[in-house]
Length: 195
Image 1: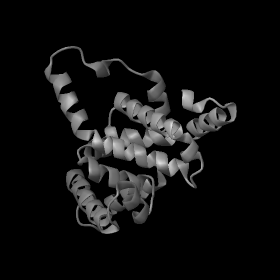
Image 2 (image 1 turned 90 degrees about the vertical axis):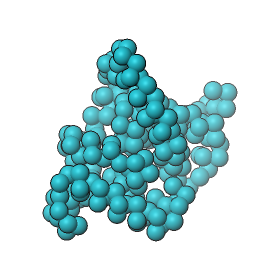
Image 3 (image 1 turned 90 degrees about the horizontal axis):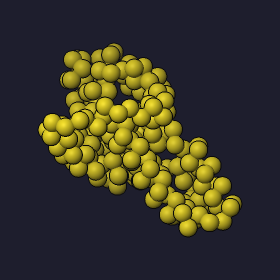
Image 4 (image 1 turned 30 degrees about the vertical axis):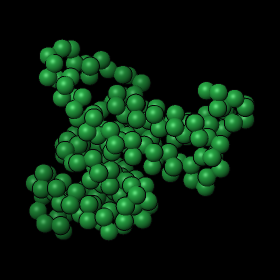
């Protein structure tokens, strides 16, 4: 990495990577729903951050910048991932997911989630999933989610509403005041949903 030659710059970047990798992995996993793809998204995000490290390090919130890159990569590549996944499973060959990546699994064990909730969340379109993850899992304000996704706060509100309605429908819950959905929202906000 010729752009990180200076020892101080390299140490700063390595510290950033150490501090941010777990959070980026959690977000990427909730977006991509696949361990290998999660690692690829985080690696690509960190590579882009490294290439721009001088500018990123000078930013007020470099972690927010990295998260924005990650979310945009996840949304931009969602269709490609779905197509590639379909091609791999239709091919009849060995399933690449049969080879576990123990390090990634260990890192992602900190993402405590319920299997049913994860399955339903995975069924949401990429943009809805991004907004639900950023708004309720990472507890970001609507304005920050809008800035990350490059849309209006109204779009964030309406997309979150549709996403929650879809989650509610898929989970078999009732109207918006349903305590189970409130539990979901509270649990995801607290980051305490268990697998």
